[in-house]
Amino acid sequence: MKTIIIKYPAGNVQSVLFSLERIGVDAFVTDSIESIKNAEKVILPGVGEANFAMKYLKEKKLDILLSKLEQPVLGICLGMQLLCKYSEESSTNCIGIFDLLVKKFQSENKNHKIPQIGWNTIDTLKGPLFENIPNGSYQYFVHSYYAPLGKYTIAKTDYIVSYSSALQKKNFYAVQFHPEKSSYVGHKILENFIRL
Image 1: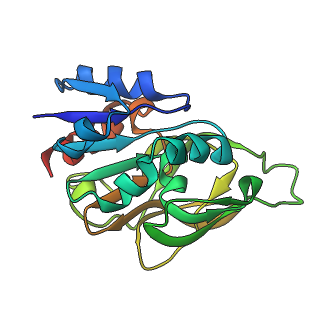
Image 2 (image 1 turned 60 degrees about the vertical axis):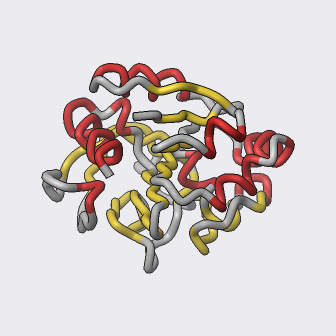
Image 3 (image 1 turned 90 degrees about the horizontal axis):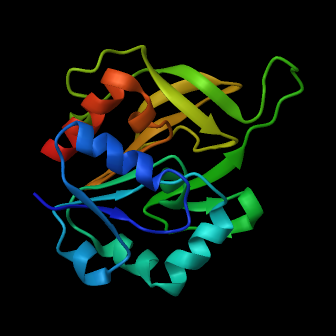
């Protein structure tokens, strides 16, 4: 089974690769259009800045390619936000799979640290990505921006506001948390994606 991790200026590409290796999946990191087209599964991970990442994807024409893929695609963290329509981070136009505007956390409460860094629960789980994953499972988050709740929401998390911690539209899946850093449950979510 050919699994591709898209190569672009994002911080957690290698950690996703290592996590897939731990569950027995041979994945390849590339920005080759032909390789991505022919992959059985495609993962767009990411830790970084939305505008900088989108510039690279556009230069390589990967934004257009991604929007046309028909095999299962998984966006992780920044990868999820880039699959949305627009991000408040540097006023960035994104790929637009999910018709959502990614917003920045805002809080006057000093107990709410921005970015959210650490473990939090995912709830109201729907769909095959979360098969055999219980509501209230903990995942590891690092982010200052979030996708609001909407018709694509397949998991929600509460931090300052209730927001989408996972999205799905047809063959496109996305998670705000880092399954590759979330121990057994995170690895199980990656396994579920590979089995789609």
